[in-house]
Length: 193
Image (cartoon, rainbow, N blue to C red; front, side, top):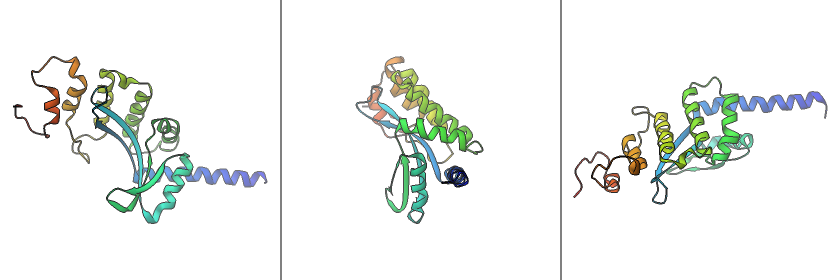
């Protein structure tokens, strides 16, 4: 194969990456879920995730993303089989594949601040900062900064409630069992029985 063909093939691959960056800008989502779990050391765990959504007729675009990233899976969106989801949820893949892609190809993104916070969270988790209550609390605060109130989907629990759960052994006792407060429905301020 001649040098011209090889150079043309590389330029097509590079063009595909730039195209994917624009596609991610419109159809991608960088989220950080905070999930309750009874076996989690501090009652919650943090789960960064990257998704691209597309109608099933555009499956080829999601396959292109999987080819470019070299990882991820494609599946029907729960509750809406007409929409497909490309997902990368492995922290290692996020660090090794998604973050470098963001840094190189999404330099013009309108989501630059959002992407910077996402990167900080992934790197903090990889550095095991979540192994201390204070480190986990800092990560959770950053996760809440990704979608402040009034900007799209609101989180299930208010930030102070989540921080209280994480830091419960490190703050003065309020006199109420934190488990009872955490299990009350959101907005319920009644004193427990």
